Image (cartoon, rainbow, N blue to C red):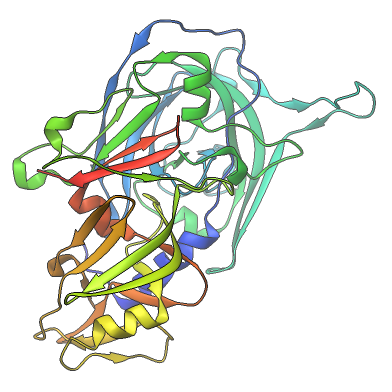
Length: 386
């Protein structure tokens, strides 16, 4: 696992706000699976500890997709391509070292045609086009219908975003063949009509024991295997009671409003909304004043030329950091709150200050907690992991 440098942190922070994805298709191909089920899916700890992937079968082809609750697209690197729920495809010129999804090899798979509501007018192919400001990159392609299964869950027919053109930065991402978007439909980038995400389609077409999925991404300390589980809550993985926070999903995010922050016994009540994004960033993005107060307790910490980003001597201890979320609290241990830089003995803080009312809980939250994503309420449940 390579160490993080300051540039990695900044790029990851941009990903949180630039990376919204598209979702599955309206066509279900007539497949209605009625049996109840719950299923565990292995997840692989990925690049620099900020991304996790899982195996996803699309048609008859298996790819390694990034688990992304901050998008609603299923994208594969096809001979085409895309980012927030997209896959690499064979249609991409020099796609790099990725497993490619070729929809022509899937029985019954075909491009999705948008039909005007009144039945009149031209019928056009569903497409997606996403630009990323942080690295001036772009991903675009078509949308096809195919059966999708996450490590053995029942296959559901949905829209898969197949990249036909993708910029170099995404080609260089190793170990990621596309994105499994698990956000809500409003985040979808498909045009002219948005499509639903995998979990939304799964809940609509099958009968899971519970309309939830859970993530347990860093169980190494107990000798476990990182996992995603669909349709069940395994309370044995939680250290204590699960805490509850209602989700504001009006813009498609897994977002919780009115988060309060605490450091060194001082509580800051804010109107900040925090996004729970498994595919976004290693940094924890909070208000400018909260970040400033946090680093006031670290000897030698100073704000860099990048507003809100702090460096400090690696020998200086950091305090713990607490989020008050819903009816509970989440504690970030100091050991998870720093990252290496390219300068010897200088560390970068994972907590950064940003303007605005939207922040990000960062990868450290998922390293320290067992998390339930509940689509029915919707809500987040969480507890320290064992």
